[in-house]
Image 1 (spheres, helix red, strand yellow):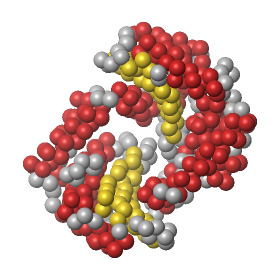
Image 2: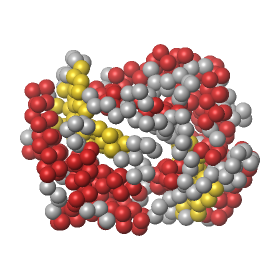
Image 3: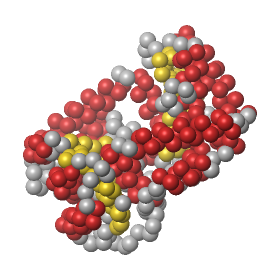
Length: 415
């Protein structure tokens, strides 16, 4: 793998794979938390409307440009990132790469396209409201981070989206889409040095030397949106008149930069409610008692904090039993460390999941971009394995005690 930083400040990484399919992504360190001074939801709305035209191409040309090659063009927005990515045959990577740079540097946001897309996004917002399991998670996040930029909903509100203007979109891109806040990544069966030269040419064409200074090894993390998290605990029950009861239990967790605590939390959440059928909560709530269709313990990492959330949906008559069972299993993890045998099995399972997930070219490409934005570098698989192997049973118990301490735990219920 080759990685580096251009004169404009853009970070990049090119990795050779054994596939004829190529993946490229342009990741931008700018998300929902960076919307101060703009209408809520603008980051996500930019992601939608940036495909609607550039100084060189119309929306119809953009939509069909990679499709006719059998490729795909996509994007997503998080609290901290906007990512544009493409999947094409490896020989079409130069075209896909140039298109991503073009989209990010010279969008035009035609008025008629903006109005049309507002209807699409407002419909998306309403569809979330009709899905309690998704709506409750977003609402929990808003309550947990209340008063902090991380509390802002990614989609915005119907009212705020309707107020977004053409000039505001242009201003957002001009202010936020700077090369020193970007990472370009490629995974394909290609000549890495040649692809690197292509990236440098694209950087020169679209950015030139626009960085005010040269960033250090770790990207600058200080901005108006990185402010102390209030940390307010809450317990709320809202009557949604749903057939099913939904519940989220959780609280604050380590940030991206608390390396040891972060990995111990990843392992803890995987043991408690990870995607595997042998997770503790799946075993107790679904397999043993049949109270839920699904239950999970998710961990979201941000630059300055994190969030762990256990989410489940069940028949209203089973809600109290589910909550009591969750609390009981948490107490077990807090009171006694895992046995050496159980810890070893949990580590092997986690590393297997990471290896299988990382074998996907698109996953690799997106993960590389996130690493470059967060750390300014990409750690190898061996480093991650070494860190996971170093986690002790006491580390896991300590994180269970800290994250799930009763005085820190929040709860939101929809009935």
